[in-house]
Length: 305
Image (tube, rainbow, N blue to C red; front, side):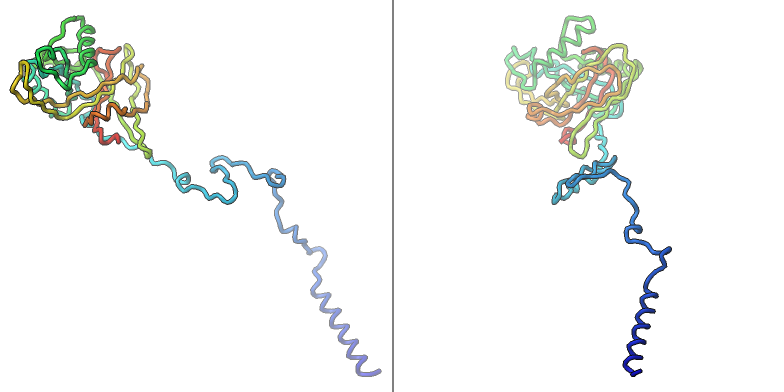
């Protein structure tokens, strides 16, 4: 035979051996599909997406990126720092720029306002406007509050200057000794709740009150006030005097009733309340409506912005 014949036979044998080496054993052979684990989830039709899983953000349409703000958990609400110590004794002076005996009471209240264990407020009333001087800080609802307090205590006579301590102890506003006596009595009368204001990341303000047993429901009041105002009086009983009033009430608004349950309530100053540019705001809770004070606190209005 020719050499060409032997070369061809050798080439055929070599190729046959190479094919046998490349072919795996049938027992060990695996198809590509056998390397993929079967999917045990719901079967989806074309165009259908998986439902949202618990704790997962909602699915967004194709081509829309998630808003990073929604991926960050909201910051906890911050507790606003109060102007007073916890559970201050409330001192409410009813005064008027047209009353000759009121400036002494105004000075007494100014001294009391320096104490952080007290919440001292000046309500200007319009009883004395008839004398020829119109008190620009007097409001009809201040007079309503004054009369309602006295009626709740079984008295139908109102006068200025009068101080109500803790919503239950009336004294002459110009009598410093009587005021101090009433303050000592108020501290020993009852336990008060401590209101707290918080502000969240969106700027929303919430009032928090703890649970507290109450004999009767209480009314919640929001009071705004200016730290210091002055007037040059040109008529009436105080003509020629410059009068200074501290913690002068600019507005008072009823927020609702509190039955002693744990309370969280959103609050917001109205445009009318902001228009007076008050410096501070207070929360006062009176039994029924104008009874003894059972909760009180005060804060900077600037912190509520």
